[in-house]
Length: 228
Image 1: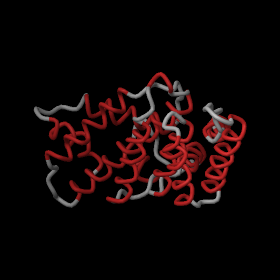
Image 2: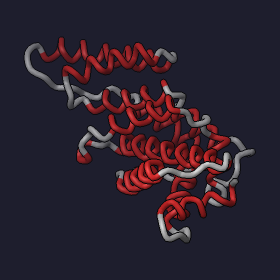
Image 3: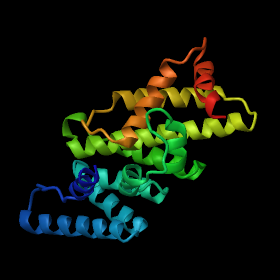
Image 4: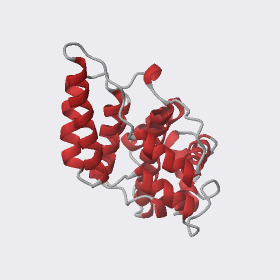
């Protein structure tokens, strides 16, 4: 698993070959240099600088989907969702709950506490990945999309659980967003990768779907009640 994560992180940051008119070699060199600079910025935690460079690249070539996927990773990282670190922790931290039988406690210990800012960055990240045509998604891009959507779902579940623990009521908007996210998770291209995080995501989606309740809100409440 650790090896797979490492390979994913490296391959995700691979600079794609670009083609354009004019002085091809000079343009390729410029674009490659700027994208490599953005990658270096991300590796050093300078996500704002990386974001600026990637937005410039994409503005000049919207079909540079390697840069688009990097931008999605950048948005998530700005919100504290650093996928490589999360995957490593999920694979190596023996104190975490079982992701299949206890996905809620597993994700609570693995992911940051949900905030409006984190959610806004994940929306940016997932919306950015959604601009890549399905036919253009590499396996690593599909994996990234799958993980970002899944993390967005798990954090929504944590937010709903916090509401119930505070004796609050789940709103129609919260429930609608949750089921929309579940649909996006289920509809995302399957990268074929299975790990602790995908196990937790699958456990949540199937658990809610199979929960008793006459309404979607009741299904969610019934699923979360044991964790209150």
